[in-house]
Image (cartoon, one colour):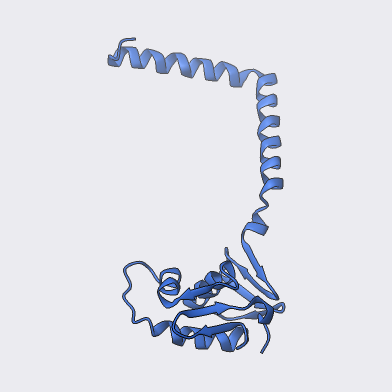
Length: 152
C-alpha cells in the first residue's frame, strides 16, 4: 500500500466509516456492552481492588490507597516514612532487612541518609505498633516478627 498522505487519509476515512456503522448497529452495540460488562465483572472477581489495597499481618492493617494504618482495629498516626517502613516489614515478615534495604524502601532515590537515621524511625514505629514487633538483629538490621505484631 502507498504511504502517501492521501492513502493514509483514505484508510482513516474507511476505518472511521466502518467503526461508525458497527457502533450504530444496535445489536452489535448491546453485545459489545454486555461483553465489556462481563469482562469487568470477571476482572473484579479475580482481583478485588479493596483486597489489593490492604496489607494485613497479625492485627496490623495498612491501607495502601489512603496511607492509613490500624493496630488491633485502632487507628494509628504514621509519618510517610514510618508507613513505608512498616509496609516493607510486613511484605518481608520474619525476614531480616538491612538498614540499606529499609532506606531503599522508605526514602526517595535521590535522598542521602546516614543509615542510623533508620534507627530513629524504627524507635518511633516500635512505640506505635508494639516494641516486640520489630526485632534488632545485631550486625545485620531488623526483622518484623509477626507473632508479636501489635503487642506492647
